Length: 422
Image (tube, rainbow, N blue to C red; front, side, top):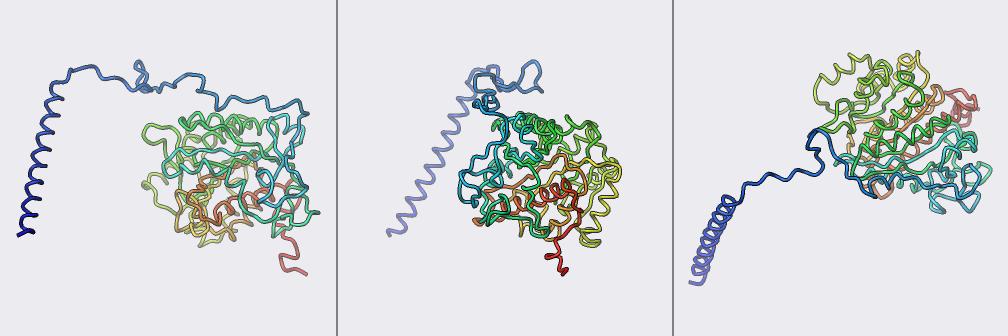
């Protein structure tokens, strides 16, 4: 009889719970109906006279994230080498990009005759890219068991196919990170734009490590501030088309940068080249828009059919009338088997061994005036820092190509020992 008694008791308790819940719901309903009918309190960020405008809270913390320190310390202008030893392997010492000296001000860039200033643009504007703000720090600490100093020292890396040490040709520095407003992406992009302009205005090349792909909303505008509208081509490496306008009322997201740049007249649509697309889009109209603007899109399907080298030959023809180029490189350009550490990875993409020689040759052929590396998310990477290392090696290809151009080396140069020639 015990089991039946237990069942009956449980049924009674369940019935009592239902009655209690119903009574509670009625009680709350009565309270709601009796509540005073008051004017709703507005959301504090909404301007009541202009509901489409967002108020920004103003207090002593509003701009502290971008208030610049003096940063000179009474020293003479110029890059500061903060390492203790002539050459330090990657796990040792103070972490900078490629163990490079540090510069803090345009005066340092000028005094050091700097060619390339690498800086971080930590952003994370979208849910899938919240970890991207950690990308610059992770790339600085990526494990490569060697160094990047003068090649007369042991264990100094050189680019493999050319055997060229780019940092003996280029004057390069770590320029720190752009300030980040973690609560306001548009303010962060303003600071990224300012910092890009600051580097470009003294004749150095900004190398930006993002951050999500909203970064070019700031960086490309900073380049245009210096070089002028329609004077710089935009070459976009990605597995996604990244075309459209801001989502949910926002101007800036990871697919708005080119559309707005073309519509605002920052770049001529015919000077926008996109390479590596292979993922679904929101409709055929996306392609129609690019074609109407005069842009070119090279899809993985045709790249595989025609070959990577032949595709780059087409790109050179596309850009015959313009030499200055801004490059935006999304790390998900690469197949996810090579680049798992990104919030928008794709099972179909480019392969590093195919693309690296072409990237190096491209940088040695055209005049790169700015470049960003975006969408690396360390939270999605594996313990071996696979994607972080790929980001760094991709940067190294561009740096080598720029060094080759500076030194007058043929863009397609391969060292005889590597090419198999005697």
